[in-house]
Amino acid sequence: MKKCNIPKDVKAICEQVARGYERRKKDYERKRFDIIYHSNAGGFTGSHTGGSHDPCAVKAERLEALENSIDARMIHAVDESLRAVGTDVSRDCREKLCKSILLNCEDGYEYPYEILCIDNFSRREFYRRRKEFIVGIGISLGIIDSINN
Image 1 (cartoon, one colour):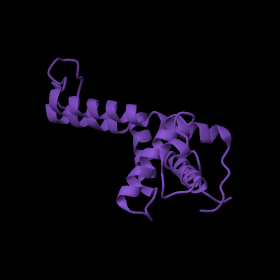
Image 2 (spheres, rainbow, N blue to C red; image 1 turned 90 degrees about the vertical axis):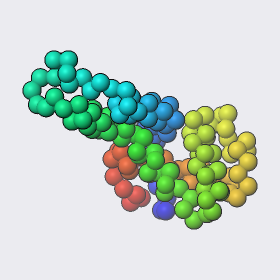
Image 3 (cartoon, rainbow, N blue to C red; image 1 turned 45 degrees about the vertical axis):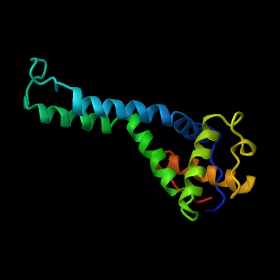
């Protein structure tokens, strides 16, 4: 990866997206589960005007709306960026690296490199990979065009 200097405000936005990832993902999965398994689909109460009263179609609409929500876009951006991190190392090492990056993004003061105990990566390498992760989120969300610097 070429050296990439992203503006501080853009970096802060991407870090915020990573910071709320675990909470957003749990909330998203709960909403998805509720739509699929607990929803009465709302189609038979008379509140659904026009269109189909088919409960499956209403559930599909709700799932589509959930999938198109900003929270879902942020979750998918983090997931995509996590998949790109550490593809050159073993699975176990990669999982630890991803968890460490997320912890560091959550609270860099509480979880600095020295606390995370990542033996396979130097401090410099860890923060380089963390930056790649942050840039990946920005690219996924479309707030960073590309890495041309």
